[in-house]
Image 1 (tube, each protein chain N blue to C red):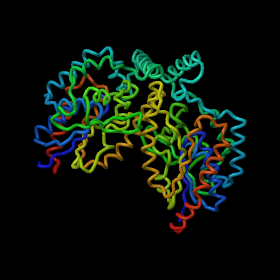
Image 2: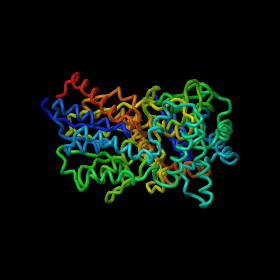
Image 3: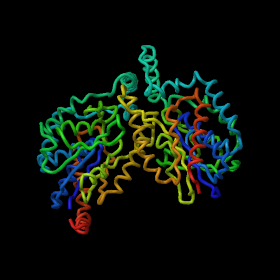
Image 4: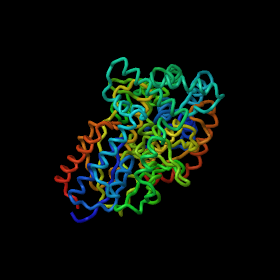
Length: 285
Length: 280
């Protein structure tokens, strides 16, 4: 392996934490990375990796964060799973109804169901006054600028603002203002940041954390909206995948959901094993 | 060589398609095959069935003036109206959203479509026609070209969340806009050699007031992206500026028709030139 690659990392919600395993595997195989393009939670992970933080520390910190804030997270884990494995108990149905209703109400009255209050202290603690120029590997973070109405890459400035923006999934967390820009996560648009790849980035290795299709007999209006949203994001992704030179589809990741924060170590382990296996099989440049 | 007409979706803005078809027929441009999404399917289906713009205009007038066809898209207009009404409606919609599959039923739509299509079938149309819908069980676009016109068109215009999905065998169908608001590749697949596509331009609302507006705007950006790819496969694309029109209010059909007519009339010389070059 001689030529350095551009690494594209994405993934919706907590599943993006799998990027820890991917980066760990690439590092142990001695693969040189000239740039990381990241979206969603993969952005703060890539930034910390580029600040030379070890995988064990990252897993510990993420697990602890979710454990400490379990009560403030609006049942994210259950919500993400209800479309796939609903139980029919009356209690579950009622709790599902309340959760869906809260989501809807919060988005009519405010900009999202969660606020930055929970995440802010954690992000400040990690990134402080760090900027993109402190990173050992160049990083480009994919976000949507609502003012321009397009998907852009941020590669300079304070990491704190940008990391918040990369995680600001519309409906869940509020948009982030940075200068003239009004930013949200681009994972709602496409879970992989493939929109702004240029010929200079080649060779590009993209890691796709397969998401199971959430369709099949929805019961509520919100489920229909989620499915429709998922269908259009998949269509955009399939088209944009033409921009990549190498694609690693981590198919074993299908079993994890976007809100599975109780399984962070398993998610990372699965990604590590699959990336290792794909690196053995694939001949990179 | 077959000339195909591809009509994009856009709610009541779609009456512009009638004006556009009038301008095309007056210029002597013969359409051999037509498809459409949502309102594009309604207008396209009518054209394929009657091949007469005057009949189409009379039927549309009858529907708009005698029936309730406006749909109330609370998701887009949640912040309009008096405050007490807004709050009450928001609470009601939150209940509906968590319990039901849609805000409105198809009752008025079916009545209106019955006036436009009667009991006619896709097989009865004078030129081939297909309606485009999205199957949310399979996550794919569906080309409907068999069965009753009213059923196919209803599925194609079934805006998710506003109207319930239409069941067709194992499929659960909603508005085709999800993947193919301007269904050019689907028309090519059906044998059109030269495709004229018509887009109803809308003005996105970037001044969001809540999370719902924000989600709607992001959905608009995604639709735009998918439309750009489809339009690139068209041979002649006509965007009609309908940004001043609200997609859920159908009263302004005359102005919309006029808009469509003028927009297409302007580009007729260029279109004829392109058709000649393509040996049509």
